Image (tube, rainbow, N blue to C red; front, side, top):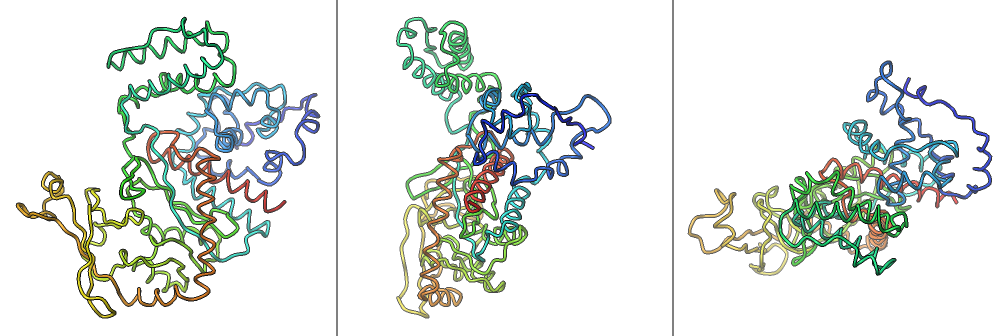
Length: 483
């Protein structure tokens, strides 16, 4: 068995933990709360049990990644801190005098051991089960929303990324030692990537060997980031952009390049489900998956609370068939009625516009028809015809020579009339007040755990980051509710 590869180290210094790691320390509380042996069961097939040298205990490797998610540090810095922070060593199951791992081991663990595991659903399921076991999940409601993360390799040139990170490092050095400015290697002045890489290597070497301040934490973090970028990420830099990331819209005039995490959360602020997609995906289309995943994790779902993105016709019909109340206010611009190509033209609720299959957003809209129930009013959306003329997907969508390209949809359907009546009830208005909680959770993920930017390239890396981050925030929330 893989768990037999770890040997218990009896240390004469173990009593230090009782002195320096108090009972209310978060890492001690997590250790006492969570049985991490599920890691053995999930990863057993990823290790060779009868050949080669013993692997580093997978629970310890997993805990390193959990520490990264909690404290928002690089591989190098999390390992460095575990050398001297006894709360880290206690959490990792190490003796105070034990040596730490090589930071590169974490990259291998992520790529080789965690690659084909549904880590996201598995870790969320563990925390929901833990919350139920601790009797802190009382509600049968879930709140849904989506939050965006910018791509790790954004729409910048490789040279711009290197220049930006080198600039931050120089700025940190100058704040400690203004005289270092005169001794630093000369900046690169041309547009050749290889020359920029060479300059960054010289800058790193100078700070490490000559400045005398390389070990100061304020310098060490931007130094490690630039080093990691030059040494490990050069090939990714040459690609200049994350291959999986896509442009999404936050409003009519602002966009981002990256990913979306679609979340479901209880009123107690425990995340029960997540779906991670590329940035252009529509929020409302993920609702049914979020409900099913929440149920699979152990939740009883009787009410769903969301914004206008979730009030489309399919979701109203689905929740009605499952006897779930959908507390999502109708937007007259979103009502499905009868419209063509529903799966191709998707509504962006932040911008209030439709987006075509090529990802182009409508530039204006107009309402047509008579007002009143029973009348066939429509909203017509106008696209930039010059873009349509050049679009690779124009066949069957844009008629050659046409002076405009529009997309129309009727405003009301029977499903929406029923939803309109429901949203006037006191119950609807009272439940709607709970929606602010998921906005606060999104803020915690982004500002407390670095979830505003992807830490690696690709959808798989984003899913792994999401799994560890959500696991960390759920554990922190469970501890708070227990206290």
